[in-house]
Image 1: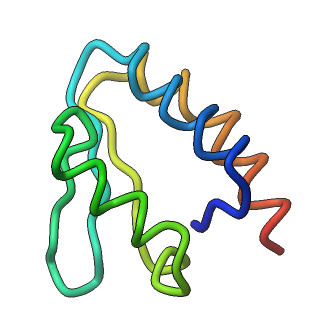
Image 2: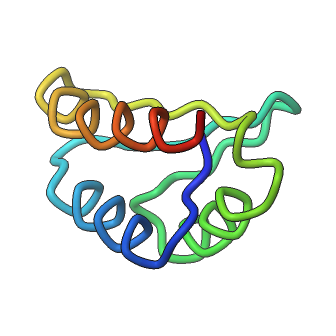
Amino acid sequence: MRLRSEADIQAFLDAVNACEGEVYLKSPEGDIFNLKSSMSRYIAIGRLIEEQGDNLELFASRKEDQARLMPLVEDLMEENG
């Protein structure tokens, strides 16, 4: 999953902010980026924009949050190919 534009980044962050549970990205190397943490979020967004973004997996701890994020992720996946 990779975000290509600032608009995608803002929409993604807005969706994460609306989530009540934990939301995080995990890299194949085992790095976990908690998107509710400002410092971790900063690093994660950098990774999403870079080529490494295609290898990151998105997780949400609550089903309601997963439902909130899935339409955004599906749209991003379609844009990225």
